[in-house]
Length: 292
Ligand code: C2E
Ligand code: MG
Ligand code: MG
Ligand code: MG
Figure 1 (tube, rainbow, N blue to C red):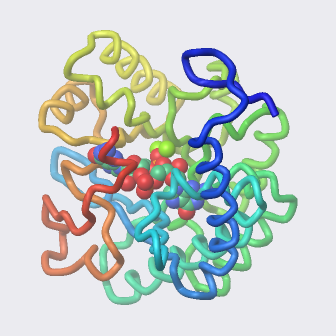
Figure 2: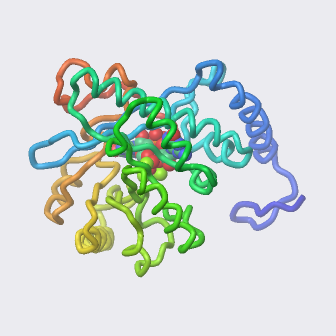
């Protein structure tokens, strides 16, 4: 089989390819058992509104503690779960888990904020998705206004179809946000037709904000566009005071990133300080975050 190689053009065989294939086969087999073995966990990362650093939401982020390989970052196994269809079961599990946990926090008297759950491409196109979500909301008792689903531009291959799916989801009374905004190829003209409450500025722009004027221009434009469309805008991947300052100057008010908190296990989110003290670092850097 001919595979497109690295910089040298094409290659027919390479040990790395073998390794990658083996990894996939192993991971696929292990993933099928991961849920029942209790190896999956949901971590939560807080979102804040400035200038008063008010907690406005939390994002649910999947973690897999593999018995042999240790913590495997989602960027590594979610694509495999998508390819093999296992993502449907995993996605359902995450949704239920996040809704259940959020309901527990609400019942315990914590500040009521919505939980954001990432949707996969396959889930997005699942014909009975809205019924499944409705069932999960009823079973967990979470008020629909406290669930936000994160969708990416790359899921929306067909504009009309995507708008129809989103409108069906919106009828449940939940919110929708557009994740990783700016990295996809959605046309600006149909952005205004999407029933989206919030744009999430991708971390790749935030990362280069302090060095690059181009990044600043892009981010300025995204923020202005969001507001003119009546959407909120949140910047993800805030790591420095400088990034926060630049974005605040551009009138961005909502933030999520290591500067405030890493994703943490549910027990740590409201631990100690009820208004979520800054600088919690419960999660060590993973391979995926370290290479960024
Ligand atoms: P995402 O939805 O864009 O989530 C944000 C990612 O950025 C998370 O990585 C988060 O830990 C990381 N992050 C947040 N703040 C910072 C920061 O200041 N610096 C750096 N370097 N990274 C930051 P994570 O948890 O590894 O997840 C990666 C991606 O995997 C997510 O990107 C999302 O696309 C996907 N994912 C995670 N959980 C789920 C899930 O339950 N279902 C699906 N379908 N996808 C998920
Ligand atoms: Mg997300
Ligand atoms: Mg994102
Ligand atoms: Mg992402």
